[in-house]
Length: 394
Image (tube, rainbow, N blue to C red; front, top):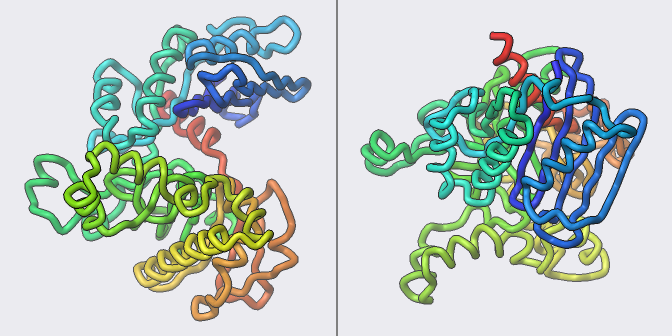
């Protein structure tokens, strides 16, 4: 069964064609900078690869470019889009409506649209990808996999806010959690590696960052909440902030609410602290003596440590900490800093192991470390393919 996985962002499309149940990646690639004259396009198979810089004005043209290459006479891997049985879409916010993977209908699309305000950077782009894929892969089943679904196992004490009850019962205001596809994938990989159901803290660090307490394979607490803006410090998002700041910005400083939203979503986090949103730039500048960049790194690490400590208390101890996603997998500096001075949790980092780059799951703790420290490369596309395949079979 051939399944196309689409991860549609506001200015990007990540894609893979996966043959299930063999889990064979037939081709993969991405488009970023959609809407610019200098869009980056990549396409890779086991035999060939292609990279181009060209204008891709919108998602429709981007997906048409992908489908045409899939069927290209020289580089293609299929003869017709009819060979694609399903398209799996990553959708960030499922709200209270979706606790599992679903076949996309007009009703599902409308509910995704209703959640735009809760995930303004993600759900509009996710829906755009669905609408375009319905045209490009017209004979395929379109299936949505929600980032919030994995966190539906959080207990009520974790997901409820201390606000009037009617705001939950009537307006569904609660913590939902995000990056669930990634947290589910890496926690299952870690459990398999440890060969036992465990108390695990998964730390997803990328442009968006989140942390999850996982007990026996289930999410029991998570750093993000009603929307994907709170918790850890992120590339452009503030993470946790005192609500009073919002009222002060509006009532005293004269900001409009939409301006506050823009500041907290797009102008804060590491960007607001340093002028850079990419951790590689921030680390490089910190090494050159930039005090703002060094402080931002320290703040980032401090926030992660706070969550690890609180989740260790919730779990009543931990068997492993798992680092994943772009920063978690690649930044030895962040991993080392987070694990420093954490002996009370039994963490002992092996610096030589930590410095090694690998695409495989690996331990980076010392032999004597009481708690495992793991780096587990995430694969959201494969996890989406697994869930799509299971839905079709059942």
